[in-house]
Length: 264
Length: 257
Image 1: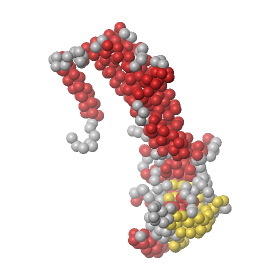
Image 2 (image 1 turned 180 degrees about the vertical axis):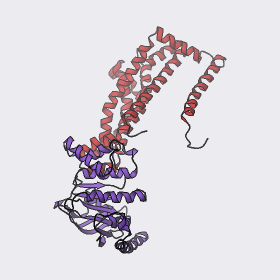
Image 3 (image 1 turned 90 degrees about the vertical axis):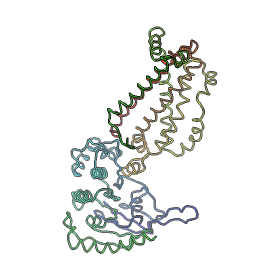
């Protein structure tokens, strides 16, 4: 498994009328090693989602390159699994059929696909819900399914775009723990590389071994903070001194950007 | 009554039946008391009697069957052409740009105005009836299906792409299933319109059908038969609508309930 390598990635949107183009993302370099869990933290509208969408292949940079395991990204593909903030389960498919979607697209033999789906249904705590329609599920359960659906493709990297952003606070904390559990279920050598976009400081620290802070628009990576907390983590790390210090530091960084974004 | 407040199921049914009773009651009152002359409007009882004799003496069942077959025939032909074309237009903007202006123009052409031309082209036989219903429905269905397919949620399409779907998979496994319930609802709506076309087609140059019977009754000034014919059309419409809705609920359990 290779890492993610981003070089000089820039994105500007064409302006409307007399206004010139809007720069969403300043030239950005970023390297993520295989198995790393990186949070991207930033105020809303800072271009962090744009960055993630370009890595997913759903958007294209105006300049620069994105490489995954040495191969240049030119469009979306199953080796880059994504979970969105909005609920994107296919409403006409059951939980299990949703998880099987990518496997069917890739023509994985039915029996093998079923076994994979069963494995991720168990890991994400969806047992008993296999035959539910998405509309019968709570937001948290829908996002579990979306996570299982992305993981079933065995992607090299997992792109998470504020996946718990629409959930209530308690569900959100449970989901963070679940995500770490699912991610940590693999051995350290085979763990998925994760890019996690969020505007929640606690969430960013709790999950990641490295937090990137993005500036207000036009976005760039303005700070990088290592999280020296060992895995496996549970909610109690949120009460530690190390956590509090990291939080204070990131808060100072973020406040400045939020203020800029508000004035812009 | 409070705005937007739902009523209980029994109350809804009672209210719905209530208006029918009121309507028929007013009709009976107007005709039985002589307020309206029988020449212009038959009483409900007369209409029922006329209906009975239509079935027993004039083989009205054959007329009804003929009309139903024409509606369904023309409608199914129109759907077979229009649904795939509409889906293609909704999914591919180039195809939409090619067909949309013409179809937007064509769907405002009144289908009934084509009857003289259709008689010239297809005679007064079944082909003319079917083509009128076809013309009346096809453009409507295309436009509605194109709009429905074009409004497919972008985030679902993107999710499918990140799961490894390619163009064909997006169309087959996202756009079509996402559009299906609304497409069926659109078909249900257009089927209702097709019923109005078939009667127009049968008023002119037909040897059978409900519309033909109504024309015949006019010559005899038999308002009872005319009204019975019209009511039968309404009833068939109600039944097909109900069946269509039941089918949609069965097919798309994921969408409703």
